[in-house]
Image (tube, rainbow, N blue to C red; front, side, top):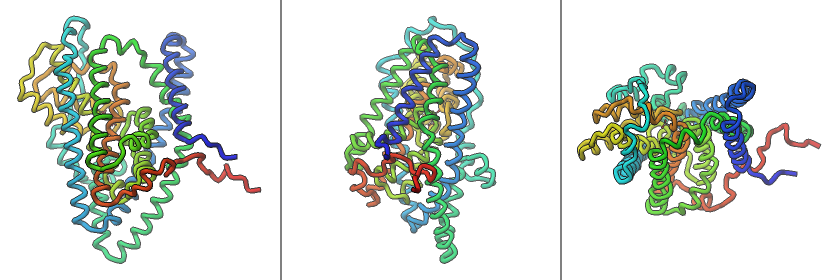
Length: 434
Ligand code: ASP
């Protein structure tokens, strides 16, 4: 009999049990060598990391074939340009709203004001953040093979779009190739389904590993900073996004948030926008009804350049560090932070922890001590998980708005609660042939 449990419910259960087991180990098993060696750094680490690798394994081929289908599906270079410009404008708009929100809340709450002598400052020196000019130049791949090998998403997207446009221009040859890309895309989607079958277990191990290392004790001394970031993330997630979905896409925000659930779980447990691309792509197409032509373009691009959650963390962190070092920020410095955090979030790769490295770029620009990053490192992992959820939700919001504007969102799919839902994944070995 087919089980009624959806894969999302199973993943959710895996996540909660992993979180609880990890927290218990953190509370009671920190000094037990056996648990640390064989469980936390053995089983949990190996299975969790292998699962993240399996997700990453999907990204490059999926984005490549899906994006080729997208470009060929749009079929018109001027429409492609319009969609691209709309996407960039919306990415920048949402990020600017996010960072403004973060700065306003942080200026009001004033996290870190009574912190100055509370804790010794760490002598953390971050790796140098790349200068803005390099970020821009590196959008164009000098060597596409290297870009594919290293999984450099922005370069891959650039190359695939140019290649897709060339396919459109190549007439019959291009059309034949597009058909092959469609087939490859279909097969890749099946590979996604296969990997998803292991997701409940993979997510369990990821959560267990993270929370056996991250106890609540780490958060306590940083509670002001931590809660300011969480508050802004929630505000942006439920406030800004709901408004945008309701006003600009004319869709029901509650349905949108509910349907995004499995992408949220993936983003939370992997803390990586990149690793969440396959799931997010599947959700916006199959559950929310956005056309592949738009989604295959905006989701990978958004995962690479649109990081509202990261910008929020950077805004609050800047104010926090300024407060700790008792440095007053002027209005023009606040404006600089808005610009720099927007650029920094474009340059941040969708992998765990990079947002913190890019924070150095923002701090440098307004003359704040970069060592301040050492203060917030301890609580960054959990915040990273939460801001990644916001990051990928922003990509889906922009996708829905654009798809709606281009008449490329199927409202019946959006409003159908069971559309695209995976109940029991049908693998050949699970079928009974009798
Ligand atoms: N982990 C984030 C992401 O992948 C990036 C960051 O803020 O570090 O979206």
